[in-house]
Image 1 (cartoon, rainbow, N blue to C red):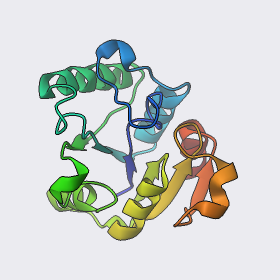
Image 2: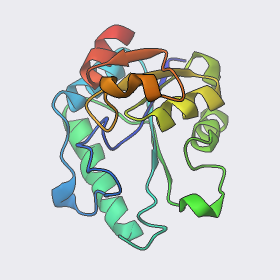
Image 3: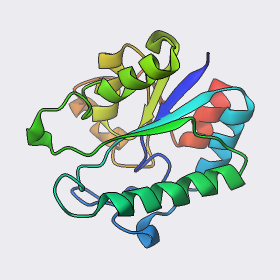
Length: 178
């Protein structure tokens, strides 16, 4: 089974900024090429999962129903473009709660692997932060960093982990994987 995990903010939609959250439908804006990339991956036979920290809920900044509405808008936009997300996994816990699902811990990826019965070894995790790279390493899958979100190539010497691959955006990743 061909599997990719996508972080949400900074990979699928515009990165809201450090310590900021996508707290409304209006603030959720697809990145250029993201829907097309997901459609290409879908057509190529990939199972696509979203694994994203959404601690704004645990911090009381926005409600679960808001996250559900944003997720519905995202999935609808992806489906209209010909893409399919197999399942969305969120960690809504604060950093201090010590859960096993908050990235860089691999809990969200392991949960998907167990639920859908596939090996993480041949999977890819696509994210826009070094935390996502660490998550991929912890889960035993390949890491792909995209540079249209939080992380920038100029910070490379300070990265605590090296990604397996680096691309400009999700569309470049899709072309590479296909």
